[in-house]
Amino acid sequence: MKYQYFLSAFGMYINYFLLGMVNIILASNMSSLTNQLDTDATGVSYLIAAIGIGRLITYSIAGALSDRVGRKPLIIFSAIAMVVFLVGIPFAPNYGIAIVLALFAGISNSAMDAGTYPALTEMFPKSASSASVMIKGFVSLGATFLPYIILILSDNNLFYGISFLVPAVIYIVNMIFLFFAIPKTQTEQARKGEHPQVNQFLTEPKFWKEGLALIIIGFTSTALLTVSQIWLPSYGQEVAGMSASNSVELLSYYSIGSLISVLFLSVLLKKILKPVTVILLYPIITLIAVTVILCNHTPLVLSITCFFLGFSTAGILQLAISMMTQLFWERKGTVTGFVSTASSIASVVLPVATGLIAKNGDMEHIFIFDSVVASVGIVAAAFLYYRYQKLTKPQLRTNI
Image (cartoon, rainbow, N blue to C red; front, side, top):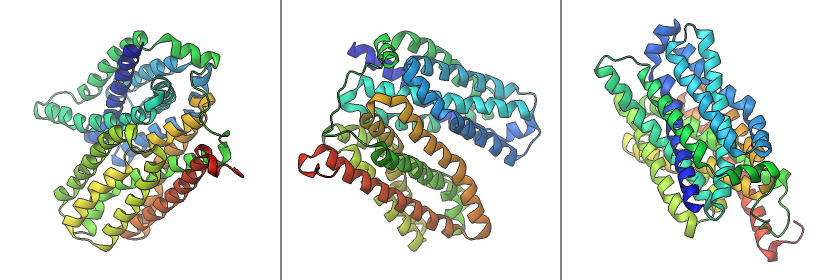
């Protein structure tokens, strides 16, 4: 059975490798899509926002369904919905159809999260945090790989839609693999409400305390990541005086930091670090890094700091979801939906909010705002750390 669990996890990670491609596939094919759909860059950005809206409106439903019907049906459905998006977009006859297809991608993402995170927690209860953090690593790898596919297609004057169809084919093959690989016992346990683990805490965790703190962290972790990915190149150009090509390289340093962080966490979470410690430590590092780039505008310092921004924003959302499923293990799918919904709200709201700040102020104001978000994340994480100590240490149990 353990071998089958590893096979299942591998298939689930492949889904997220492909999701990493999907996350940037519209922006990466912007010129082709603007011609096909008779729109502009703003129109494509609305397509990207539609994916976020699709996630937002379905996360809670998907989480409840995961607890009711099991993890496997949600994971299989997510692949089907994503194939509809990937096959449909290159052949979409108009912008309206493309918007509907983008919603399918968002729905797929919510179903994937609602099925996969609880499944990994159930299959690997002793290393649930490491298993969840690996999702971020595979997403980053997918996002790194797609530009090379697009470059090959462009250099050979091939149809841009191949960059959509290749992931679609892999999704179909992986869906068939997962249909047979995911153990039936996991689905049956989820459907019947049978859980192989017992409550490991001294007292029952309280949703309006620990749960709410984790939901806030779900929002702030995604907000910090979103701000960095959108505005670091612009900050490099406008504030640090970097060229356009050099400023784009800041995202490469950011991505390298993210990948190293994932590898770091996947090893140390099993032996040394606790997830609750990382959730507190990382936003502190983020706040320090943001303060540095606000105080020192030299390109070298900015490049080094981008590495630490990528390092400290990687994996926090996954750890928050993992902790949520461990604290409230009887409703894994439902609570996953709550944290993921907060994350999705951040992915929709932050681009709009920071865009308004950029329109009415200078680029530094965006990262001042980012420091405020990091501070909120630190407060929520400190409260969670305090509560977690009371849940796990007998001497702190009084008045819990």
